[in-house]
Image 1: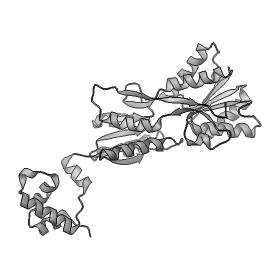
Image 2 (image 1 turned 60 degrees about the horizontal axis):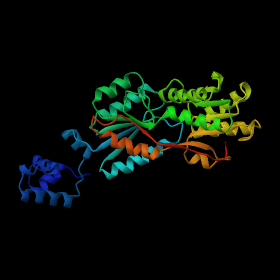
Image 3 (image 1 turned 90 degrees about the vertical axis):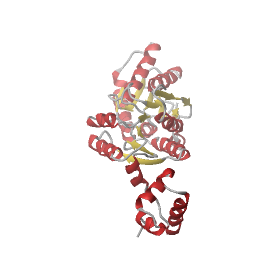
Image 4 (image 1 turned 45 degrees about the horizontal axis):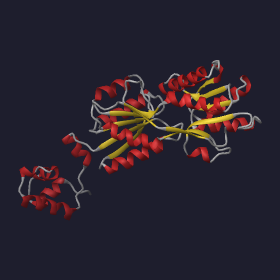
Length: 326
């Protein structure tokens, strides 16, 4: 049976209230001798302070909550790793809750779980809140930052500049001699997808290449979406290059192209967006728009505690790493 604060009080021959004051560090409320007796009792009994209970009483917390969507790509773990490492340096604890995929009910349950206990802040990784979940977060009064996504330009977020990603990936392929370029497996009705499509179309326009709506394939960033897009492109278009919205989508594209006897890169150039370890463990190795996910996590944690006059939008760097698929 675990040792309670009542056991400590009995052993030290003081009241429960006095033990609570000692644990809270309210030195003006007790003598040095009393403090020594309480700490001696704690050591002898092996008492461990219930942090959650203390937080509920004091309404102070050193906990950061991470909300993350059900992953269809693999980059979130690098962001979480960064947040955890940097949080621990600041003596902060981290809790992680998965909120499904555009699932309003799950989002609301997760937010309520966080809001019902004191937390210092909420980081939302690749989460696009739905319906009432948006207002729940706004009304909570808890500092929050979206990571690798944004609800809108009004939200506080850290991400790559997705317009520039769409633009630079397209320009890279144009400079390789391609004029018929697909954009595959992104959610065109969501903020990130809209920004990447806008960048893609802008690059085509700047290079005097006519827009073709058939070249844009709506999806969800998954491997399966990449497979479906390649099947579509092969039967309905004559594209010579394609941008996969994630590494997994690009792998789906390449595997399906190979099954259809389409050689990558001789007949079809492929570039992915993300640049995780996956691009180096497949054949051919995939040219990628490589995002700074570790830096995103570190920056988001700093931003969570930034003052109101600091920027609410931070874009982290990215680069194009050319490999064998283009």
